[in-house]
Length: 71
Image (cartoon, rainbow, N blue to C red; front, top):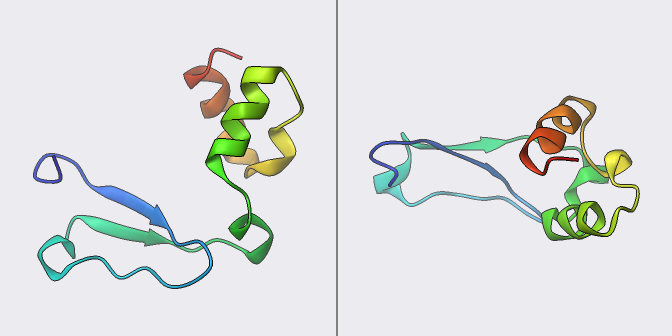
């Protein structure tokens, strides 16, 4: 699949180094420490439950998440 698409990775709790064969297709995102501890699973669960989640993601991500999850 990486032959057709690129992958963005936000390393949590450390540094991520993609395998050499994927170096050109995998890009590491820089995230602040306050976002490092946030789990995407937790965000999805909060969306599913109708609980507040917007404060857990970067402001620019909120509209996209609303579109994807029809919130």
